[in-house]
Length: 211
Length: 293
Picture 1 (cartoon, rainbow over the protein chains, first blue to last red):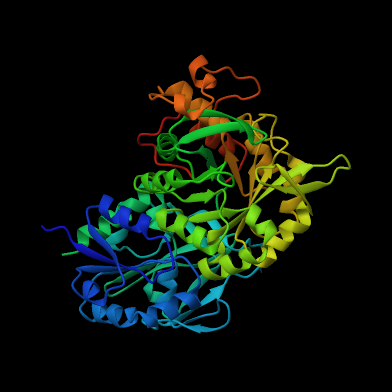
Picture 2 (picture 1 turned 30 degrees about the vertical axis):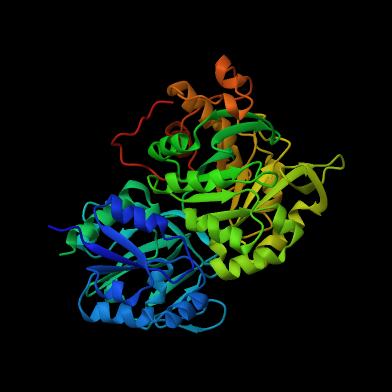
C-alpha cells in the first residue's frame, strides 16, 4: 500500500510541527498546506489547532479552506480534527464574543464554568486527563479505558447530537465531550500528538485506516 | 477523574548545551539537551520546559535547532522561554515546534504583550514566568533577566494581573532556591495558588522527591518543574559523550559529580511516591519503563 498523503491544514496560527511529525512517525506522508489544490489531491485531511477561534475562522475564510474542507468531506475522505480544529467544526463559539464556526457538525463551543458543584475549575485545563470511551471505534483500538491524554483548552464542545460522542472527560467533576465521530470525521479535544506513545497509537490507527 | 499533577523536566539551555546554575547564575555544562529530553520522555515526564538562560543577552540560533530536534521525536508538550520579546519571536518559537511560550522580562516591561499574545495564540499557549526574590521585609518581588534586575513589582499582584491579561499558566520561580536543592519555597507557591485560578507550576529548589510532593500537597501547585535531581540521575545512569571544552565551564563534567543537597531521583520513582501520597498522576503502561529509582 502507498503511504497515504495527508494534508495538514495550515491557517497560519499555530505549531503544526508536532502533528506533522506524529503523522510521519505513524507512517503517513504529511504536508502542511493552505493550498486548496493540495488539500483536494490528498487522501486524508487534518484540521489541527491551537489558538483563538475568531482569528482562526477569519483566516480559514480568507484562505478558502472552509470550501476545501467541505469538499474533502463530500468525497468521504477521513478527517481528523484536533483541539481547536475539533471546535471549529461546530456551529459557533463563545470565545471572545460569539463567533460562527464551520457548522459541519451541530453544537456549540462554551467556556468551562469557573465552578461546578462546588469544585473550582482552573481554566484553561492544562494537563493529562482520562478519556472514558463510550463507543467502540477503530481509531481507538488498543487504547485502554481511562487512558491519559493531553489537554490544553479553556472551551469545550457541547454537540447537539449526543450519539456522536466517542469519549467523555471529567474535569474536576465537570463531564464533557472529548471526542466525536461522525461519518468519516473523527475529532478530539485532546492532542494525540502530545499524548506520548498512546497518542501516537491513535495516529497509527487513523493512518492505517486510510485506503 | 481529576486532572493529574504534572512533572515537568526543566532544561536550561545555553547555546547548544544543557546547563545548570545556582540562583540562575554560575552555569555548569551538563550535556546535549535533546538527549536528556528524550530520556525524560521515555521515563514518563508529562512535559518539557526549555529555558534559554542567556537569550536576553546573546543571540540564539541554536535554540530553534534544539526545539526542532526535540519536537521530531518527543511527543509531549514543550514550553520554550527566554528572551522572547515580540509576537514575531513567539511565532518563530512555535513554528520551530514549541507548544507554549514562557514570557518574563518582556511581559513585565510591556504587560500588553500578554494580552496581545493570548488573544492571538490562545491563552493556553501563553505562560508567564515570575522570578521571585524574597525581600527582607518578607514580601516577594518579581525580578527580570534571570533574577538580575529589580522591578519593584509585587509577586501576588503581578500574578493576578497576569491572569487578567490572559495568560494561561504561571511558572513561579523562586530565585532564592534555584539550584540549591533546599526545596521549593512553599509560602511563595501557596501565596500565588490561593489567588489565581490558572495553573501554577512550582519551580526552583527541588533537591529530592519529597520536595516535589510538598510543593503539590502543601503549596497547591498544579505541576512541579524539576531540573537538577533529574539531570544528575540521568548523568549517573548514562555516559555523556562529547567535547564541551568550547562551551565554558565544564569542570563539573570533567570531575564527575559530587552532590550536596541534591538527591538524584528518577521520574518513575517520583510518580510512585505521588501515588503513595494520594496525588493524581499519569500512570504509564508498564512496558519498557524503568521502575527503579
